[in-house]
Amino acid sequence: MKKLTHLICVMILLAGCGGQNEGQDPEAKGNPQGKAPATSAVAGTFSVEKIEELVGEAKALFDKGKYNQAKTRLTEAYGAFQRQGVKDESWHIHFLKEFCRIADALQESDKAIQYANEVLAHARNDDDRIYAHNQLGSANRRKGLHDKAIGHLGKAVEMGLKAHGPGHPDVASSYNNLGLAFLGRGEYDNAIAYHEKAVGIWMETLGPEHSRIATAYHGTGTAYDKKGMYGRAIINYEEALAIWLKTLGPNHPDVATCYNNLGLAHDNKDEPEKAIAFYEKSLAIRLKTLGDDHPDVATSYSNLGSALNNKGDHDGAIANQGKALAIWLNAYGPNHPSVATTYNNGAVAYSRKGDHDKAINYYEKCLAIELKTLGDDHPDVAITYNNLGASHIRKKEFDQAIGYFQKDLAIMLKARGTEHLSVATCHHDIGTVYAAKGDKEAAMASLLKAKAIREKKLGLKHPETQKTQEYIDKLTP
Image (cartoon, rainbow, N blue to C red):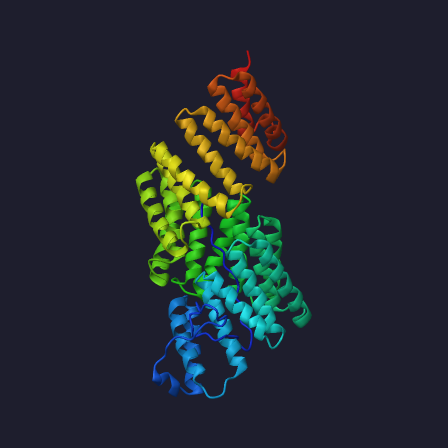
């Protein structure tokens, strides 16, 4: 089951907010600054004080997690700003920054990149440039461009150290965001190290109950979850949740994200009842604050579906995956990785329900998207090949199963090396299918490879090693 983890990036709020021409929704083609929306004639009569008031209201709405309302209010303020006789460049940059962070919060990554590049183009000082590189890092990370994200965030750290020194809270924000980018690249120990750097600085400068501290705890929890250390993950998530409930209140999107990821950790611990409870809390907040069609709502539906599937409620799982799929298709179109994940999770539910043809159909849809978006050698593609192989085994189509398992093995050998446990799993799977076909020689060759890796990595008495040994014993005269 492929579950959807959400990460939280720290927005650096620097003096001289930096907006662009934005009260606009800049989908403006051929105009990098976008085109301001039509505003009423009354907007032209707004005083500077009124514009400042509107900007303040937009920020307050943002802090409450009401991002669409914040965008509307900021757009109104920007329209009035555009009608001022004298334009203040510092306010122009301020608007750019505010629209940028709203776009990032709404996961409108291309818009966030557009605004951040405008901040960079109009930057008046290092703080503007640091802000832009942080936002470019965040947006590119959301798009899965982790190397590009790390490049921007590395620049933010370098510039922050020169401008502010090693103990500044904004340098810590860059460290935290860098940790998220390394997490996305699968370098979990690096991710933890950067989050811990951030915590150390924030503890000294902001105190132990600041919301930024919670952000770092949350990122650390996600890294531990990815490492399979679910207990450590839950501890970090609970620390983050306690702070956010105090500082943000019970209905903030960040609280919803923490509930979602607590659900993931409990689901990974085979505690589906606890997982379902957390996913339902997350979903309720997201529906209330983000609306029915937001991608985060789709994440909650998809993860809830996975937990219901683990509980044995396959029809409930399929229904929730269907809700997630509808939102993803509407938000991102048919070729987005999240669409692929939802097809995968729907396939798992159909497989457990016994509808193997439907499962194979969904896995094939998932595979087509992953090959297009991730490439031939991505580990997620290997997982889908493995799932397809398992589905064909259930239909007793052994040759097709072996073909998919061998594709899985080829990717894992390239990605993980010859002695990784995932490679042992591939050898084991191939061996069991050959055994089912009655090809004892080929089965033994694969099973012995699996046993050698598992014995070296896990020990002779580990259940996985013993499982492979049992198959070997059955084949031994």
